[in-house]
Image 1 (tube, rainbow, N blue to C red):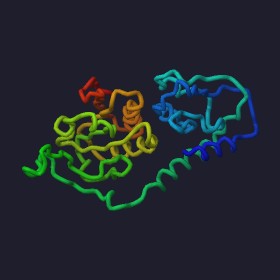
Image 2: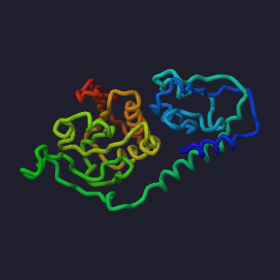
Image 3: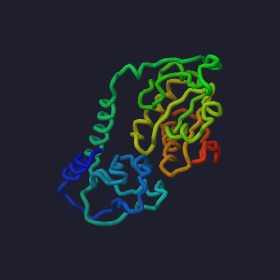
Image 4: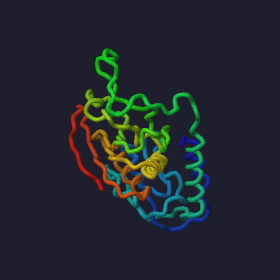
Length: 257
């Protein structure tokens, strides 16, 4: 959301005010990780200019589900005069968010699904000093089709897009014989990612799912996307969560069910 859109949202606030609980965000503490955005089911919080902001008082129910997700303790709930929570307006807002996301998708040649090689197939000798292990295209979670053939019975990697830059041996250590989708939990639309991952889980019987992210706070949002995606899919599915250090080494592995 742009600054103009955020300001328009504030202008649309209901004239009916009430003394009630409402979320307060300390921007000095906020690091822009975006975990609160994912946690807010009403879509009341967005990252604007690198900081979490309450885009409309009438979208905030004041329950504070976002508080426990903030790694910087930048969110509290205060009692003050605020626009009343408007459930109907919130539903419209969420529908508009989803519609805007869907409309932003467009078809281009780069989105055409392609299988680059079969599982277990190696690249041609001499093609590269460090052969690519990529099996399909596209890889961006926003662009892939949930029903693409290379996801059927796949060992799927859900990877923060900065991980391959930190890991010099990412292809050989993780990507080999795997399908992959990448995204950024801080800069991208996490709600759309949750729905897309849920659709992939429903459309395919995956062999495994591995989530790989960097050890910085904003990157841990990818784990939540996976958790929410599994929950939304209705599929009973455990996945491995892998944390990568800035030095490119594996810091931690754990199974999340």
